[in-house]
Length: 273
Picture 1 (cartoon, rainbow, N blue to C red):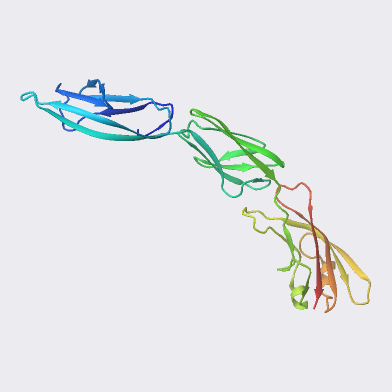
Picture 2: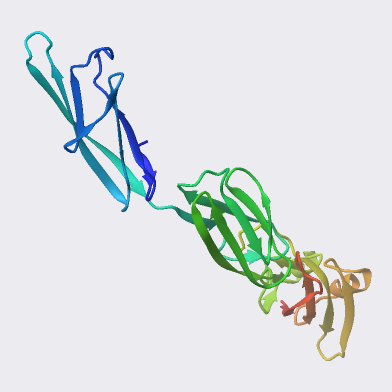
């Protein structure tokens, strides 16, 4: 092996190519230490107490059985001593979100995947390949993933579990209090909840809202709407829009994956122009 873990033995077989294994006129040493030879092959081994690149010099002497002349061959060999280490990489964000699959990649240097043990708390994990897992969470708080086995001491990684962030309520492309052309306003069919800058494939649904309609020099008219799209009463009120009118979308609520109850998203105000 050219790579061993600190604390394990480094072992190598040393021999001279194109040499008869039946001959007994050969001697082999490594770093000045003579090595026993069997069938023309010497076995070299040494302990590994520190990480890094290590080297050793091999010397082979071959004696000519007729002339007694000694021919010497020398070379230097290297190997790497590494530490066992573990890592858990969250493939999207550095937090687990409730209600969506959270992909993670698990790795442990110097540990066979067959020996690596992966356990968790506060979350559940499903294997999705040799080093990939899908994490699912249901409760906000703390979670841990622990790697062990194959000589690796138990290594624990800590994470936060959070709800999906609040989506943004939109009327078409309008999300801030704004003057809006009458035709554009009437062309919209309802309110949407959009997750901005969120890497996961998740969709939040509008549960309902209240629309208040204020015409110039008239009383405010209010209608309640369930779901994202306008019901018939609200649609009728929207079609009455004229320049100078103001529409208030209040108490907008939505549910995102993993939500038990609807969350409030705030209000929108539009003045018709």
